[in-house]
Structures are given as C-alpha cells and as structure tokens.
Picture 1 (cartoon, rainbow, N blue to C red):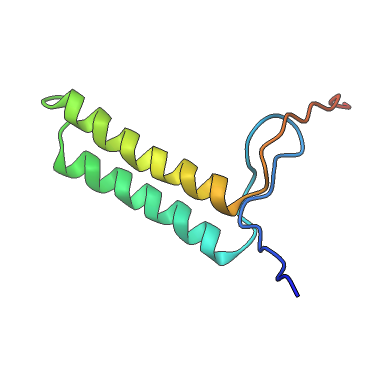
Picture 2 (picture 1 turned 90 degrees about the horizontal axis):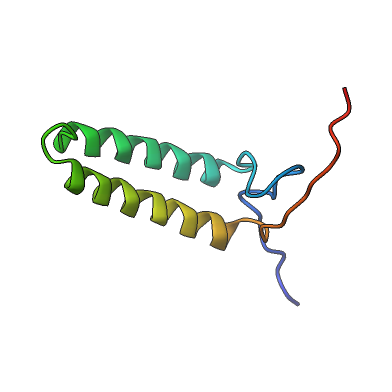
Length: 84
C-alpha cells in the first residue's frame, strides 16, 4: 500500500508559489533559513564583500526552494477574483 505524502507547504490559493507551512518540519526549515541569512550577514559584510554575500544568500535561497519543491504541493497558477 502506498503511503500518503505529507505536504509541508501547500500551494497558494491565489497566485504562484507556496503558502505557509502546515507541519512543524516546514516551520523548522523556514527558521533554519532565517538563521542562515542572519549568520551569512554576520560573517560576510555585504558592504565589503557584496559578491560573496550574494552568492551565499543565493545558495541558501536555492536550498530553500529545493525543499519547497520536494516537500510542497506542485506549484500552479491559481488566479481567483478577489472579492471585496
């Protein structure tokens, strides 16, 4: 019997991308990302080494997107009319 895949990040209801995390693992990944950004900014001064800082932040962000893609719902374009 196939196991049901646990979705960490559901697809957004309106727009493109993923919504808020639905399980603790997703929140943990997001907190690790924020900590990584803080550490990168503390260790690599963007005023002095901007290119190195950009590369490090890009790698961390790419890793986050990989987790979103692997553990989240398939991204789709959901455009709904916003009711006021």
